[in-house]
Image (cartoon, rainbow, N blue to C red; front, top):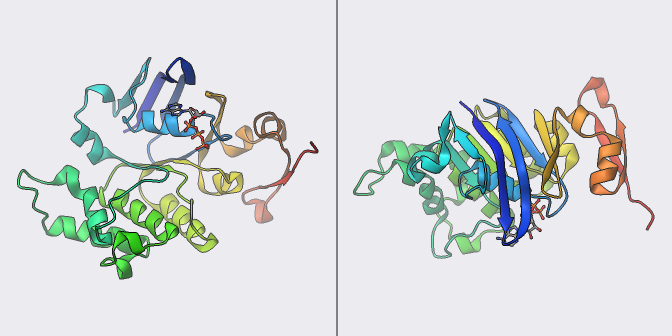
Length: 256
Ligand SMILES: Nc1ncnc2c1ncn2[C@@H]1O[C@H](COP(=O)(O)OP(=O)(O)OP(=O)(O)O)[C@@H](O)[C@H]1O
C-alpha cells in the first residue's frame, strides 16, 4: 500500500515547474512537503493525487499506474484538500461533506445509512457537527477549511493529501487539525509552511526548492541551519525540545 512517484515532472508551458523527481509515500506515515512559495509543492501534491498528468515517469498507487486507473477508483483511495478549494454557495455544510461519498454512490445516486454515518462522523471529527445545517456562504474561512477536511474524511480514503490544511485556522484549530490528522490511521501527505508544525506532526519531510526535491527524510536530517539558509534565506537556530521531544526552530530575518 503506497504511492510511488518515479521521475515525475510538470511544466507550465515551456517553464519547468517540477523537474524529474521521485518520492515514495510509505504506508501509514505522515509526510510533510515543505519549501518556499512557488517551489512546486502543490504541483507535486497534485501529481501524487493523480490530478495532474506527469510529463515523465509515473505515479503508482499500490503498484498500479495511476494514469490507467479510473478516477472513481482513485477517489476511493485518495482524498485531496486543495488550497482555496471552492464550493458552490447555496449548499449546506452537510451537503458539502456528502460530496465525499460520491465515489461510493450506486447508479441512482442514493445515499445509504453508511454514507450518512460517514458524513456525521467526519463532521464530528472536525468539530463542525453543530453547523451541519448552515449554508456554506455563512461560514468563516476557518470553518470552511474544516468542512473541506470533513469532506475528505467522509471519502474514507487510505491516503489523505492536504495542501496547507492550517490555512485560515486559529491556533487551537491548527493544533486540533494537525493532531487529528497525525492520529488518523491513514497515510498522509501535507504541504506545510510552518516548519515547527512540520517537525512536530510529520514523520518525514521532503524539502522542495526551485522545482526539485532537495532533501527527504526525518526532520533532523532535512532541516539543518545550512539548508534552511540556502532554501528559505533566513538564519535559523535549532534548539532541542523539552524532554528530548521535538526540536524547535527559531528564525532570525537576515539583514537586507
Ligand atoms: N497552471 C499553471 N500555469 C502557470 N504557472 C503555474 C501553474 N501552476 C503552477 N505554476 C507555477 O509553478 C510554480 C510552482 O507552483 P506551486 O503551486 O506548485 O508552488 P508551491 O510550492 O505550492 O507554492 P505556494 O507555497 O506559494 O503555494 C509557481 O511559480 C507557479 O506560479
